[in-house]
Length: 319
Image (spheres, helix red, strand yellow):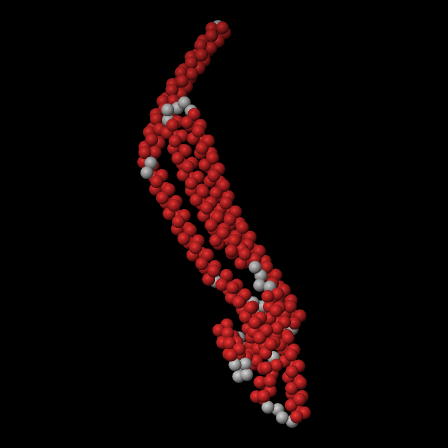
């Protein structure tokens, strides 16, 4: 089985072949390059396929595996959509709360009660604070969507298509076709001449196949560049996105904290005013309860007196 080449090893072998094609052993590593390219894009999701299943079974298994991957990508993308919907719904609910606080504040200010101004002003303050917090969260969600969610959705929904490999596969096919043709011709010629020199054979083949070999090397480079970009998007670029969002979150929490600290400066005064209003309301409620009890007592006495009078009248009439 051909060995898998590292990118650095491929670069080194290619540059050596360019520098000294006659003494290069790149021709012996073409099968390894082909094997490495096949592994890079994850085509061989099950490495043992080539040994234990025929082409029909391999195609069937690959189709099932592809379907599973598509379902997982859809599930992940759906998760991110639900994730954003939940937070957006929270922002909308928070804005609705602020609208209701504004309405209640206006009603309190327009009322005739002496405590209306304090209540209206307090509700208005909370409306302003919650609206500011809601706007900050909305801005955070916009950053979350642009920095994390959208790139993640794109990454999850992107499939490495086999079309990317087609130019390389064509270059390999052209190389192998010409290699087999030249090999047969040269071996036949050498047999007819009665002289087979391996060194001369290799040098001649290397020279005759230089154009095809360069094309193969070019397409291998192009493909590895594309795969390196994909690897970067799934690795370093993705990690950098979370690092960037970390700084966005830090700024968000700082702004929220500064807002709450500024609002907290008036909290003691607001609490004392609220307690005073509650005490007045409690006193007023107690007086109303006492008045209610007096009225109920009077009504009860009147009802008892009326019943007694009716009883006396009934006795007088019957006698």
